[in-house]
Length: 320
Image (tube, rainbow, N blue to C red; front, top):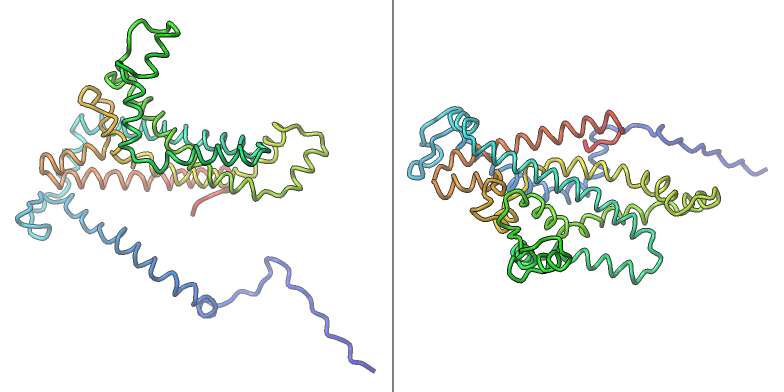
């Protein structure tokens, strides 16, 4: 009589036996070894330069170097919070960062949802390519394009407004401080819109088609499928990207503001990076510039942690 085969009972999900830390290391040592070079690069180039933050607490002298410059404590930070120009630069940075975040976040989701509904593969690929290209174009070119379009002499925008009878004489758009935030937001939106849709399109293409088929069986129209299937499907990814994007509100850089701005609109175009650059290179006060950069980094970390906490409490999605 044949011996009966032993019964194998599958281990249910979530009931896997826990492995010790050493055993997990042995099982994954190949992945750990492959990650070592990248960890070293991050430590060397991202955390190594942080030792330069010491300059923020010194009265740095180039001739004496970091280790021999006189210690100044928090004097640079006290000067920072007494300077009205700093708060003006902080306001400009936050406003333009929020405008870029809001327009980029909702614009990318809207474009991804619309492209997801397009049935013509050729048309979809064409729109994707057209919207991706500006991301790879230098800000120098983007700024020149906008300066040409908005020129009071031969700009297309002024010509169109005058032809429609909206204005009687050309407007010097780049010379009006009140318009600078909106012009910068429009330029950034045009440059980054297509690039920001890549992840959302990838998430939408990975959604289970059975969800759409079930919605069609229930009589859902195209907008209803978008509302009840597509949007909930991309929402976890959107929240994670939003958390990461919040950290860049105050880290907006200076290239776009420098190229689109001019002395006439300096009150609206000067951001924290330009403010720190001015003190570090033009005035030569490196300690003050490092104090500004240190302030930016600490505020960015605090904002990311706060948004991550709020997202975790409200949607159960978090970055860390």
